Amino acid sequence: MDRPAVIQQTHDHVRLALEGEGTGHDWWHIERVRALALRIGAEEGADLFIVELGALLHDIADWKFHDDEHAGPRATREWLSSLNADQAVVDHVCDIVRGISFKGAGVATNMETLEGRVVQDADRLDALGAIGIARAFAYGGSKNRPLHDPDVVPTLHATFDAYRRDQGTTINHFYEKLLLLKDRMNTRVGKRLAEERHRYMEEYLERFFREWKGVE
Picture 1 (cartoon, rainbow, N blue to C red):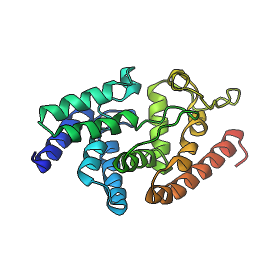
Picture 2: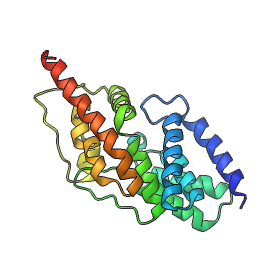
Picture 3: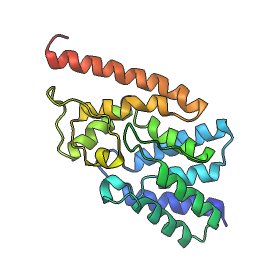
């Protein structure tokens, strides 16, 4: 298996599929996650070939847009098999794609391998901080969700089905997912990087609510 060729072809395939996407799950999200994953993976001693493939393919058929939680692993398997990738590589990357997503406050999403934990941390880091805030509102707008409604309280979903069906506000999404991610980081590096991004989001929310009430 020609690893550099597999990476380059996968890069080109994913970029073509996701470039110009407007919900915050676009090619540049993939590129940021790849860079973060390689950084974390290098420090943690992970297999960087698996890490890079997992980062490139982690959103290739996201359940949020296909209403099928198996769409991503299926598309990943079809793509890597078309490149004649080793079966162990295909299975490992499919496991990463299958398990990467947050599925509700009460749902465990543990990764079995170091490479999976690295890619999951990188993906979650891109949901935090300034970029995370921008992506949250881009996604909420694409789903026609209100910015905020003081009469609608956040829900800590106990099941994936409840999380998937939720149509709450974008501000509630911070409390239902984004602010929970810091404590769900897997790696030492991921935990360190999440601290500052989490703090920035807390500061943003404080400012948001002051402006909402007109008391800033």
